[in-house]
Structure formats: structure tokens, C-alpha cells
Length: 351
Image (cartoon, rainbow, N blue to C red; front, side, top):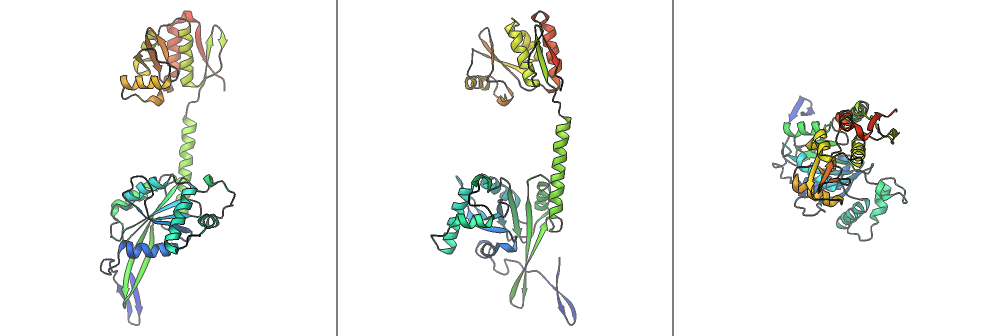
């Protein structure tokens, strides 16, 4: 980008200055000016706090924390350098830290900000926030602050590492990172500031959001359409039990086999040692089972196990996996075929 001055003699190129040359500081000058007129970045922003770090063990602080009209918190990270100095990674950490904020915490944060910069103790921060959000005073506070956090990076320039990272992150649904470049010029003793949103281009921002949403919906539809939701009935002595999903169908069949005398070591050999973990002792309580599993299998993923429904035999506890997928029908057939006298079989449920 170039700035030209129109004169009678033609176009005179004006070279950008630097903030360092102009003795403009990051916090005391640029941050203060943006805090006092945040609308130059976005007409629908409200500054909630400056140098915000209201989290446990906070060693770093958000330059400016704002709120938009949709109830989304906005982390604004400011750099006066030409490369933005890893601002995107820093801002991501801050976004994660502020994301759990409730409306009440936002009110307290804004009240402290108003008191500091207006010097008024009786400011009704709640009323101002509700008015800004166009929200009903009786609205549910939990619905006023969105879970998504926006990020605005403001710098004299952005290197390729930053822009590549931002463009990649913006491809994910729910991620909104904008890059605004500040270019100072000195003209006849005056300082002019050119603000340019470079990512995403303002003309394309809405279109890119629509593309991301469309792509996310397509991916969700693809996952749903390809997922096998087959259910199975376990049949015992000719009685058809209620249909079960895959994980529970295997569990119910094993329960029925054990009730009819099948031995668990044989069952474990059929399904595989990785699908049925065993520990010494008769453990019934779920927490007790989990402790025993972790001690015996440090890398076990407890959420993938039926820790609340262990099997017991010969002084040992057996814990079944929940993860069967494409192996479900083959496993059910192998189990029923190994114990034909038990009269435990299965059949596919009709959808």
C-alpha cells in the first residue's frame, strides 16, 4: 500500500513513519487512544477493561477486553512492531482464559473499568451493558454472554507466520480472528494514522463466515450419514430382549452368558485381552474399579470402559470395553457360537 499527496505538480509519495521514530509508545499512547475510541476498530464494540488479568496465577494481561453486540467477548492484542511478534498465540491463550466469564463477572469487570476511567462510584454498569446488548432486564444472564471469543490483532504489520496461522485458524467454525494494520504518517508536523483491516478483507468477511458455516454443516452431515447406527436384540431361550446399541449389545450378551455359566477367561480370549481388562480382587464401586484399572493399566482410557458394571469370577474383576464399532456383529456371533448350549443368540433390530 502507498499513500500519495496530490499537488499541482503531480503525486508525491509519502513514506510511512514508524511508531518508534514518532516516539509513540504501545501502551501509553496507542492502547490509550484505542481504549478511548474503540469504534475505529469496530463500531459495535464496548471496552470492558484495559490490562485485564482477572484469572488465577495471571502473569500476563489482555491489552483491551471488549464486548460486541452479539454478547461475544473480544480480546484485543496490540503490538507496535512490524511483525506482530506472535500476537496470535498470545491472544489465543487470553481467549481461552476469558471464555468462562459469566455475565456477572463481565458486569464487575466493566464497573471497575468505569470507576477507574470515569471516577464515578455510582455508575450502573449492569444497566449500561444491558442497553448495549439491547437485552431485556429480565433476560437470563447465562444467555447474554456467548461462549465464542473473538480476537482482534492490531499491529504496525504482520509477518507471514502470523497471517498464515490466522488464515488457518479462521477456517474452523467459531473462530473469528481479525488483523488490523496501523500505518502512521508524518505530514507537516501532524501524525496521521491509516487503519486497515487486512484479515479478513472487510468486503469478504461475511462471505467467509457463510462458507465456514456451510463447510461445517457439510462435515456434520457427512459424519451422520456414514455413521453405522445398527442396533441389536439379544435373544435368550427364544425371548427377544429390548434392542441395544453396539456397546450395550455386547455387554448384555456377556451378562447373559455369564448368568448361564460361561467362564470369563474364555470370553476374554474371544473378545481379546484389550477389550476386557482384568484386575485382582472383587471390585464393585466405580471409583474403586477405576483406581484398580489405573494401577494395572496406566495408559487405559477410563471413559471407554464399563467401569460401573464390572464382571466377577474366581477372585478377579473383568472390565469390558465400550468400543466395538465394526467388530460388534462379528463379536456377537463368536460369543454365541462358542457357547451354543447357553441358548443366547442375537439378531439385528429392524429400524
